[in-house]
Length: 240
Image 1: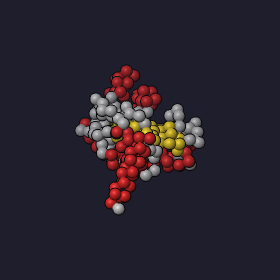
Image 2 (image 1 turned 90 degrees about the horizontal axis):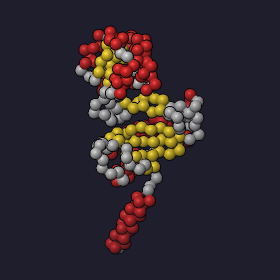
Image 3 (image 1 turned 135 degrees about the vertical axis):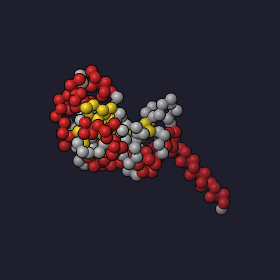
Image 4 (image 1 turned 60 degrees about the vertical axis):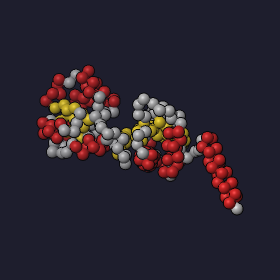
């Protein structure tokens, strides 16, 4: 897939998207084929960082002990110390999960974290994950992890052979959105066993807009291009 095809699809999506009273995200939908997601080796479940951050701010909750409390206070939205784990019931953990994008954890207290938070965070896919860099040693740094999470996304085949992900916000430059879009596509491409032969099609859309297939011109776009070509030919003939 070429970047110019993505830029053309983004242009189509912008032209056909009405202004909303909220900022829409640009979504990529990759439909797969000839793949069985019931097989573990054909499932996709991965985290990776996009070239351009898609969030100005990320809500991070740190599950730590006192060793990391000072470092966490300046960059994390919420902090829960291990000495307070016993006071965390199911209801309070659900409230915490609802306002958290990512949880990070102190490595040497992971058994405590799993015992206290696992039943709620596990099914939601919010347990601290080493793939995101979210499990930090007691002497580790938290700020770089939080910064990295601003551009972190998860790609996953859930109940169907389709990957859905956000490439960014509509306020971002088309070039940056295209870079993120291409990064998502290439990551999925290398995750499936037969690469391009497992890709049925790739769609692009803003949150509330229609979807457009990347690499496929719409009738409206074709008509515009035909008109441009016709005008160009007429100008050249007139000069002769």
